[in-house]
Length: 239
Image 1 (cartoon, one colour):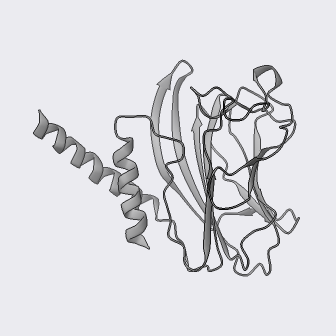
Image 2 (cartoon, one colour):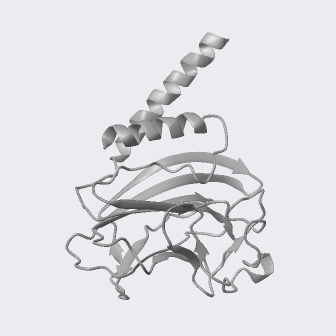
């Protein structure tokens, strides 16, 4: 399992060095048992018409956005009355211009049979504030469960017209092995500030919980350091 996500993470970090990253480049965590994976990227108004604009940022979306890679039938939606719209292809994400800050959900009404664990990754750029981790509820309830495990997979300081910001990929895992039969679930979160851009998300499900599939944050930091050193050495050789 570890070799799988380490190889994936090394490839991810190497691909990111010195360039903007694609929204769909999430870490791939190996889960025990039967599992599914799906996700959302390319969240822009060229791909999805009718999902608001600057003047209508708080309007309800016409429907949840179905996953567009992997296998699954979960939906990505905005909570009505909160701020967020699908921006241009140049931005390639969901832009929150201001208050009331965007609230979002990823929901699955037909989860994997025997579901015991869920891993969720979120690709988000934050101009200010502190991101509050998403919570999970199931079977139509409002349990609002905090993740059992969490880590920052990736971070990158950026600068632009709005000033400095940081782009993150956050990963969260829930241990649902004692929850009984799960017939539906929903993951929800709210962005921390105006000018936040949500680039994409990935959802994995498994019928077997075998402990944390998410490495400690220090593991990613160490991998990033190895890649940076390798890239620097390569540049010196080419100089």
